[in-house]
Amino acid sequence: TLFASRVVAGIFGALGDPLARLVRDTGSADPYPIYESIRARGVLVPSRLGPLMTASHPLANSVLRDARFGVMPNSEMTGLDLDLRGHGPLPVVDPIEGSFLMRNPPDHTRLRRLAAPSFSPRALREQTEIVESVVAGFLDELAERPSFDLVTDFAARVPIKVICGLLGASDAEHARMMDWGTTLAGAIDGVRTMRQVHTLRRTLVELNEFLTEVAEDHRARPREDVVSHLLADPDLSREDLLATSGLLLAAGFETTVNLIGNGVLALLANPEAKRRLIEDPDCAPNVVEEVLRLDPPAQFSGRTALEPVELAGRVVPKGTPVILLLAAANRDPEVFADPHRFDIDRPNAKDHLAFSSGIHYCLGASLARMEGAIALRALFTRLPGLRLVGPVRRRPSRAIRGPLRMPVTARTRS
Ligand code: HEM
Image (tube, rainbow, N blue to C red; front, top):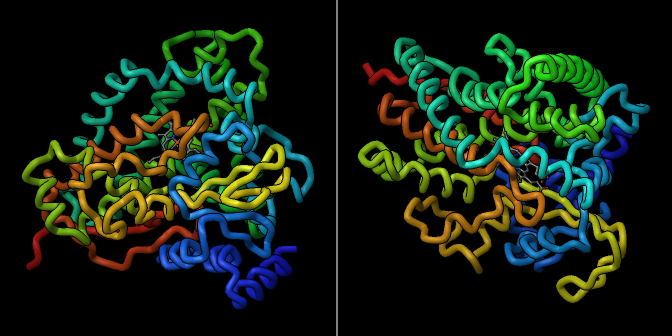
């Protein structure tokens, strides 16, 4: 199946099918020309692989806000990805496919409401202090090194600390959580080889065991965090408890790592913006917003028509997937002037769809913005001479975009 699906994508890609090109070009350094070719074909573009696609900001936004569309298992999005279901029933709860991210109302509403208190403004203020202090600590340590990896030694450590805090897990768990988070994010794109299938299964088993222990610990010693909030609901099933707590790692880790990584890349490529950030660190939130717009970590999302829907002059039959190219919508010239330019003074940067829209709008958006702003501001004010000392390796993914490895130094050139 794997080989056949690659061949199909290869043939249709060669024939110019835009979705097949996206699938074929997994990990390509620059997907933006493909998005532009899709935009040039119209607001709602069919693919021979089945789904419809849109690069239009208003259309993507309206589909995300339309109750006639719902979420669907990731595997159905392109019709090409193998997923675990193709390899027999899962032994454990899957925090992506089994969580409220992939559920429609009323389940979605009920579960999201249970998780929401942990993302309140008060919780955010507490997290802000923690992030400021850990980031300063990381930078003290990195400033002493001749070179380091921006992704693994810095960007990845910030969200892991936050997520361990949300789950009430100890710092000793950071390394395991990082491994699990990386595997889960890789699987969003589809699981393509048997090796990936095994790794994902092992990860899910370990994560389920860990989250079960976390829950038991909270049952014995309740506190003010997500897990305790979830446990306070006597009707919550074990599956929903594990999926919801696991979702924080699945949705909140790699996305934030890539926000920081893409932010550093954007600032190194735009010295004027970097200078502004160093001189006026308070503009960090603008920088973050523009990074999210121009190079969003989550490149696309999908919805399925739950009933026949008339959309952009076409009837979309029930069950048809529609791929919302968030990264392309963020460069829609109808909404953003000079859309390919990195401009931290853009008045409407916040209108981007990097956090989606409608009922699934990212629950961690404020948290992610805060982490990104603190990380970028502290990094460049503390290490203003930061520069690359080797090639950037990108993630082999089309759904999640960002650097995987990024060797840097803060030392001045000798
Ligand atoms: C949902 C992006 C950080 C938790 C989403 C969605 C997107 C997104 C696009 C919606 C997907 C869809 O509509 O199909 C991002 C980006 C982040 C980020 C770009 C960082 C830059 C976080 C963080 C957390 C988090 C830090 C929590 C620790 C969630 C949750 C959902 C979600 C729980 C599900 C919401 C729902 O289905 O109602 N995120 N996210 N995210 N995100 Fe984030």
